[in-house]
Structure formats: structure tokens, C-alpha cells
Image 1: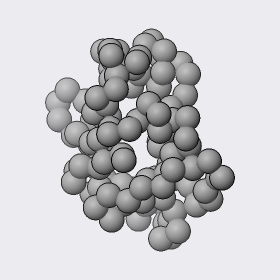
Image 2: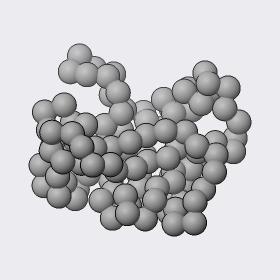
Image 3: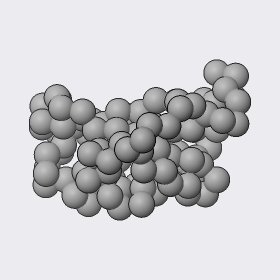
Image 4: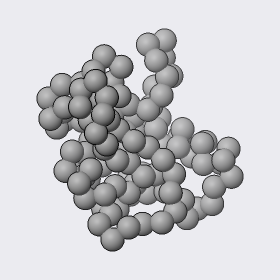
Length: 108
């Protein structure tokens, strides 16, 4: 399962509304190669699922990830912060052995 914090939920709903997206759009979460630690997170809105997608719903937010990414994201929590140390989405990933200073890439 991939979890979502209340702050992240609020921001996702706000972004969907600002973009004029309908209810059939969901948040696609993925992992791609790159970044200073080897793997990077990817977020986007999508409205089409693929055959190997894993679908979750947490607190009314539908999250979809491909099977390969899910292996890295199992039990991860998506959070959002707006503090002085940076604004944006952050992943709290118990599978990561290390993360880069900016928090946008990780290694397992």
C-alpha cells in the first residue's frame, strides 16, 4: 500500500481543481532511474491505467503505480510541506537505504 498524508491530500485536490481535472483523473506515482542517489520519484496526474498497474486508495485519493515502482514504494507515505526548508511533495520511504540532500532521489 502507498499512503498519503492529510496535507498531501489537500494539495492534490487543490492541484486537480486548478488544472480543471475531472474525477476520473488519479495520481500516478512512479520510480525512475536518475538523481544523485540513483532513483528518483515521479508524480503526475493520469486517467488511464495500464495492465501492470497497482491501484490504491487512501483517504479518498486514488494512487496508481506500475508494478516495478511498487516494489520500491511499498509502505511509502506521500507528504506535502510548505515550510522554510522547502515546499513540495516528499516521500517517507521505509525501503530507502539513503536519500540525497534535496530528498528527490534515493537508493535501496
